[in-house]
Image 1 (cartoon, rainbow, N blue to C red):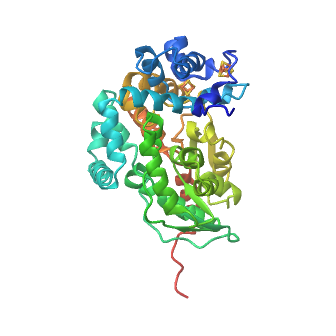
Image 2 (image 1 turned 90 degrees about the horizontal axis):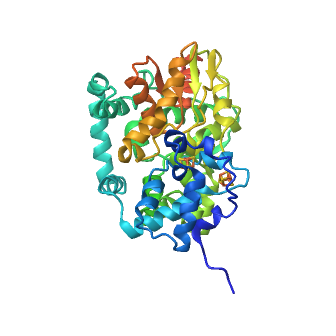
Image 3 (image 1 turned 180 degrees about the vertical axis):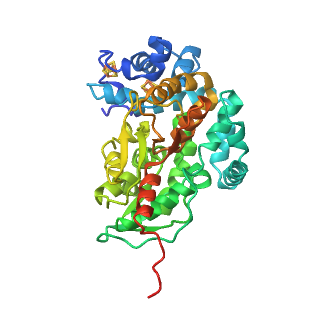
Length: 418
Ligand code: SF4
Ligand code: SF4
C-alpha cells in the first residue's frame, strides 16, 4: 500500500536531536528557550503532524510563529534536516485551523493584488523622496519604520544612463523579475541589475503579466494565495528567456521552489531558469570595472545563503571592483530579524536579533562605509538599525556597487559623435 503523503513534514525525519543547530538559531540565542530552538520546534511539529498536539495549541502557535524561517539551522545540521519544508507544512496547518493574525491578513491581502500594492509602495516612495523619512528615523518604533523606508533610497544619487554595450561575448537573455517592494522602492537596484548584466553580455527583457512572488504568503502559511501568484508567474515567464534574473534573495528562493509549490512540468521548467543576479554575473566573470575606494562589509541574506545555497557568487561580484575593501563581520551569516513581515508581527524579537549585527558594525575597525546585502527586507532592517544606532553607515545591494564601478570605468557615457 502506498505511503500517505506527509507533505513537508517528512523532511524533518532525519533529525536525531543532536543540537548542533542550536548555536545557529537567532531566536534560541535571544531567549535561551529550547522551544524557540530548531530542535524544540521540530518536536512540536512532529507532535502536530501526529495529532498529539492540536493546531490551535497556543504553545505550538507561539513558538512556530516566533521562528524567523531563516533556515540558518539547515546549514548547521549534519543530518540534512529540511527544516524549511517542515515549517511550511506546519504553518499551513496552523493557518488553516486558526487563521492568520489581522495585521498579517491585511499586509498579505495588499501584496496579493497589484492594484493595491502599487499605489501603496508608490506613495511610500514619494514620501521617502520628501526627505521626511530621513529626518524622523530613529530608535523608537515609529522612528524605526521611518528608518526602514529611508534605507530604500539609492546609495548615491547618480545621473541615469542608457543601457550600455556589452564588454564580453553574448551570454543569453534574462527576464527581469520585478517583484512588488523591489519594483516600487528599489527601482534603482533593478536599473543597476539591467546595466551590469548588459555589460556582462546578457540581453535583459521585461515580461508583462508578472506578479508578486508570493514568498510573504508562503512563509506565513497562506499557501493558497502563494500558489495562485505562482501560477500567474509561471504563465507569464514560461518560455520567455534563457534565465529569470532576480535581485531579491527572498523572491529568488520562492521562484526556485515553484515546482515544489505547484508540482507541474511548467513550474519546474520556470524554476530551473531562475538565477540570482550574482549567479549570472559570477558566471560571466564578471567583467572588472573601474576603481571604487570604499570600505564595505557583506551580510549574506538567509534566503540567498541558506535557502538558495548561493554563497560564493556575491563575493565574486564584489571582487570585480578594484579598490573595494570587503569584510564579513562576526554574525554576518546570521539572520538580521527582518524575515518578511516578521518585524511587523514580532517587533521586539526582530530588534533583539538585529542588535548583535548592529553591534558588530559599531565595533568594526575601521568602520565600514556601507553594509552590502542582496534582499530588500535585509536592506531595510539593517539600514534602520544603523540609523537607530546613529551610525554613519549606509546600506546597498552588491550590484549597486558594481554599477558604480562600471560607471567609474566610463562605460555608461554616451558615445561622443564621430
Ligand atoms: S535539526 Fe539537525 S542539527 Fe538540529 S537537532 Fe536535528 S539533527 Fe541535530
Ligand atoms: S529557521 Fe531560523 S529562527 Fe527558525 S529554528 Fe531555524 S535557525 Fe531558528
